[in-house]
Amino acid sequence: MNVIDLLVTIVVVTILVTIVLAIVTYVAYKLRLSREPSDLDRSEDGLRYFVAYPPPGVTFDAAATPTETTAISGHAT
Image 1: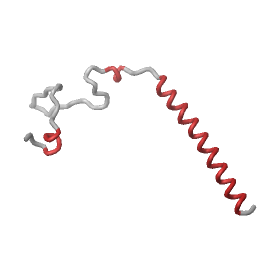
Image 2: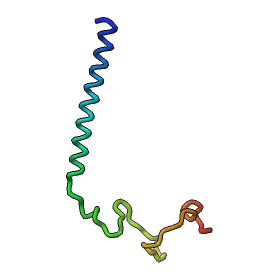
Image 3: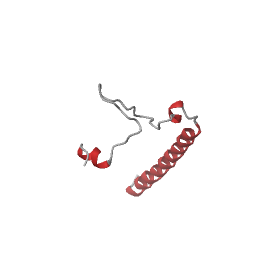
Image 4: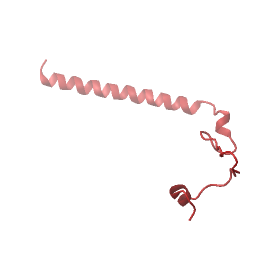
């Protein structure tokens, strides 16, 4: 096997693997789209992954959101 045959084999295998991965990715994407949304997806407050937890003794307003300067600097300006 000379160098040209080796390079052609590498290119063909790379193309075939890329096509197979594209098909697998597309099928996984379609399966993800077709699944039913869970109850967490329909939450009223819109927080799917995070739950607000206030420290003990601190009142917490879930509707209030910090400003960008408060979140960055740690104190209100």
